Length: 121
Image (tube, rainbow, N blue to C red):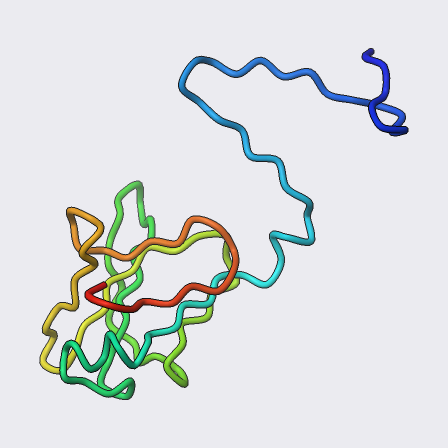
């Protein structure tokens, strides 16, 4: 057992292999899920309104990642009760609204919180 730190009765010693990281966070910071908003700037760039945007979630099924059928955003927001999200945005007739920051065009959120898609994606 290790001695306590800053008046706490216990501390933790961890071994982490090279080029890895361990993120420790208070449980309250992981509550509330993921909320993704689509900005007016992004919509204007594509000539759309929020009612025309659909989202296709990427999920694991039978050991493979698959895209679920498109669903409308509710009030211009995607709400998920999970820690992370991978998804595709599309406009009318299935026109893909790509994420400029990823090779496969999917948007990703890795931690709970509020995110906004803006600019060119």
